[in-house]
Image (cartoon, helix red, strand yellow):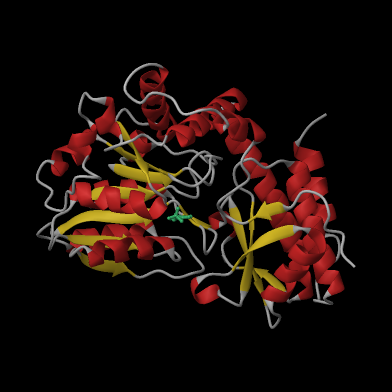
Length: 394
Ligand SMILES: *Cc1c(COP(=O)(O)O)cnc(C)c1O
């Protein structure tokens, strides 16, 4: 027996729920790529992508996923043999660093772990020790989607300045853009990247990259530049150059609609919605944790991010819980990845989500904990409801 009929709910940290408005915006014929409204559409998107990152710098839209946007950022500012520093706080900064290594870049990892954020004072210390200024760039994620950690990018930018170091600060905002503030210029970020399919509520397929003047200056001498990713090419006058070929028209229509939805709601409200729903999830997990079998992966509460919560299951198989939620209830949770594979599940609360989606997901998890007889504190979902009732005023 299952209670699964009805719309399936995808609670994985990307791709996320695509709003019906975005789907509808894409359902239209192809248009001319050399003249007409598509040219204005590109202008508006380049401007508004920069707006979401809060930068006066340039923006570039690639036909790619996040991995492509990683490569776009690296090839435009680095040369073979350059050294970079990767700040570990889960899986994703390491993955970005690995792309760099495979391109011939020397990668040093500032050791971190799966259960905590990057410590800015450790970054400052490492940079002070780099007397010759051999480190050319620093790679960090704002949110690590595997561990569920949020890094303090403002503090990391401050640490770099305190050390008087000139390395470029490059930030992965794939799991955070459109969900929490990103202040590129204020925080001293030189290059940032994201994708379309998480907080940006658009199907996978667009890589978003932004660069400030300092990064564009470094770009001029970068040895890893290739024709497809090259910023200079994309800064050309011809519309065709903006995408190094045929524009991804339908994804652009979708992204335009998604940005309009974000601006209509107001970015501050969008961020607040994410913070409220994330805290609702944390309230529930906090109560379940009283049974000793369920726990937070991120140890320090203030380092838990607002887009995904990674939940450890002590001595129980998280795949059983995920299978129950999926097969019996139509809720698809994220699985643990990297060293958390087989040890954790992840609840996404990212993008086009509201209270019924999140409270429904929490109810289903609580139902699974009961059905599978996994010890847990009772009333997690109730705690989430009480939190929202208190914060969302009548
Ligand atoms: C999802 C994700 C990526 C990778 O994006 P893909 O589109 O899957 O290539 C990179 N970084 C972070 C933080 C992510 O969450």
